[in-house]
Length: 218
Image (cartoon, rainbow, N blue to C red; front, side):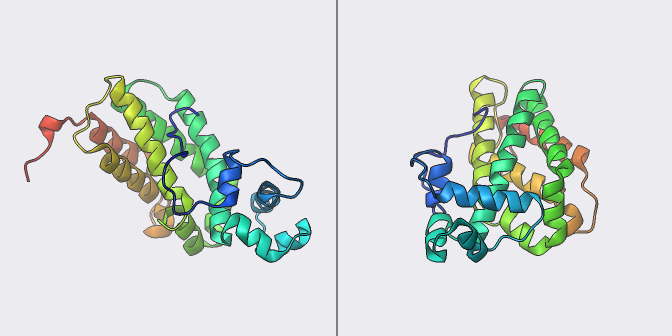
């Protein structure tokens, strides 16, 4: 995947049978975690509430079996959102222009605009803001850790090509960028302010253009 750091081999405390099957580490069986995922994803896209018990009944398997597959309802919802977010990520990565700070800022702009334009994301946040923010930004779910990991991968590619020489540690820089993106995307729910994508991208450009010699002494 473009600019995505592989999850394989990386310790993931939120690993489930579903997450492994989505990476195709386990073969799919007639009724499998992937079936539960596909059913739940269809419901989420239509704005329906996802309940593990209802999924189990529709699939014709025990409730406990579905819980073993997906971990928890929150983790399942996180996997669904990540699956869709990953597609938007790849589109932004493929279409972003420039190199270094210009590429990073343009990539983030395209990504944020795509997320804000995606009706399922908007509806999910509008229906239950507190729950949505917990799924999207909490360390307990898969989303934030994977977005940070993917952002680190993008930064490392730009650094390896000689396009950026970050003033911050790569992991720290990725974390800061992701927090800026989160603050922008969900600003209407967090502060009541409308998302300001240009301002967020300008901040990210400044961070990416900074070099070690510009790092302030502590």
